[in-house]
Amino acid sequence: MAGFRIDRISEEVRHAVDGAIRQMNDPRITENFSITRADVTRDLRYAKIYVSILEDDQAKDMMAALKSAAGYLRRELGRAVDLRYTPELIFSRDTNIAYGIHIAQLLQEVNAGSAEGENSRDETVSE
Image (cartoon, rainbow, N blue to C red):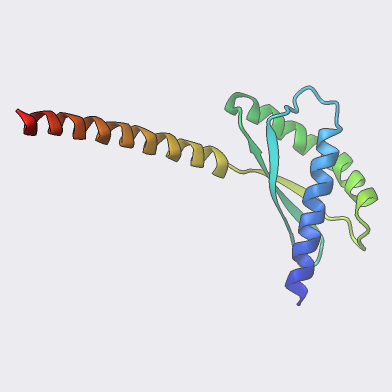
């Protein structure tokens, strides 16, 4: 039963941190990001926030901005979510979406190559 509570808290933390980041006025924070997941420990002391950033060239600056603003974001999280302890935020880059896009592109290339191969086989068979 306690697992369901942690899942609900993790989702609330994800939503609150996402809203707080979007309201920040730091120029290093881009619009093309998403908070994919938040994992809160069972004792509510730490929350690992997974951030997916689509532009690789801006990812390093944005992660640095998030790590430097962790105290501010923790305070905003404490205001938004009523918990006994406000968890310490640990930011981690999530590359699953970028990896999925890369795999989809590879599959499209393979499908295009196999379609060309079928066309050339059809031509040799008909001759």
